[in-house]
Image (cartoon, rainbow, N blue to C red; front, side, top):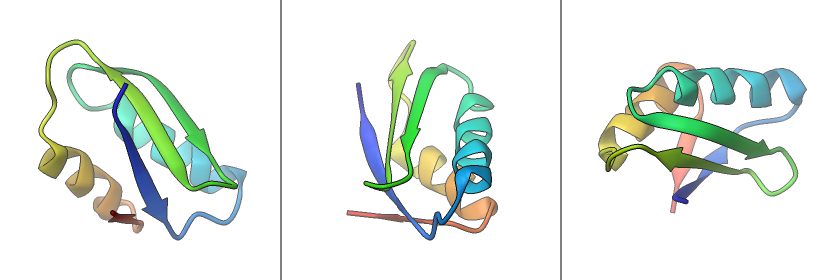
Length: 66
């Protein structure tokens, strides 16, 4: 299960936004976002390019770090 660190989340609305953005990507499911740690993890049906994941997160105003 891949995971990324998302910078800039401050509330549950942020968590929901990141979750929806990741769930909208083809092949991504089982998204779990933890506000306290800033970690977002997800399952892949097939490998998903990290650049695509980063772009989806950045498009909604957050930053992927690490």
